[in-house]
Length: 342
Ligand SMILES: [Zn+2]
Image 1 (tube, rainbow, N blue to C red):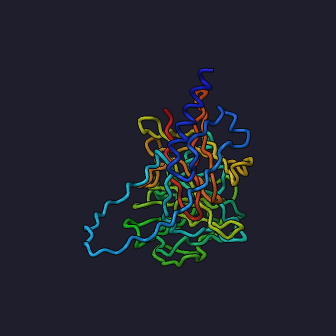
Image 2 (cartoon, helix red, strand yellow; image 1 turned 135 degrees about the vertical axis):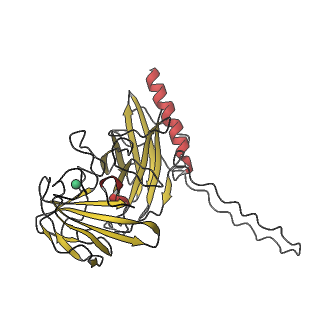
Image 3 (tube, rainbow, N blue to C red; image 1 turned 30 degrees about the horizontal axis):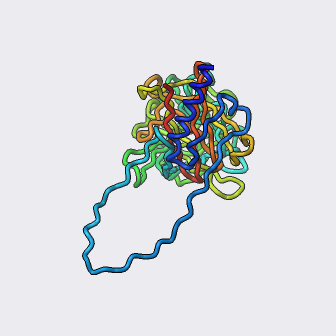
């Protein structure tokens, strides 16, 4: 009984804190744990109608100079924040081949402790599928990795290509890496255009099955400079023609320390009065433990991409206490949220 009260109190607090975002009903006390399997109990309060006040009469009294007080920045610990993102790359695989990221081994994932933390993402495709440059750039490496130090040990990536990119919107160079190739079409020093075929998918190096390993490195071309590619790839579009959005979150303890290599549940509710339409599991990562880095600004340690716009519930069960956050995903935007476990 005591635990149930605590759970309810925690959920009430978190829903209240989330009220600065799109969810406006702060009076709800979600039932303990039952929300996981049943329909959500949240309801939206209608937004107040705008009242059309008459315009004030003009007077000749000079108005005081405007004080330019900036609005306080959004605090992702209290609510969710919507960011434009930095989607500088197109997919390295084009339709009709598989241009979606494999959900079983996302960036930072260890597949529940059975594999190395993943420094990139996988695009599963047959051997020989064209691999395309994600943006215009200069090839800085094309060959095998028997001698180079681009990977943790020799012949890890097999045949690989690294392209260096420069963008007006970001100061350091950004590198994209394409690994396990069966064929390389370019050579170091060559300039490539966005979408240009640079090689073909394969299974060279330490690959389990034929796929493209795609990596983004910021600032320097080394194994420890990786970032989550899904935060850099332009979102795909849904059937309604709108681009998908994504969630980038921080999962931390009360001291702000990232909690890593644990799984969070994320559920999609296009209609809050209906059951979930989709459910996902994401594994958290942390740069302090392994060189799997978050974004320089956001410092996220979990991310989920290609999400239809709508309401999402992030939940985590810890020592009998259910923690949850509700966030909204908007088309083509990044939703930031910091999830704190007490
Ligand atoms: Zn990989």
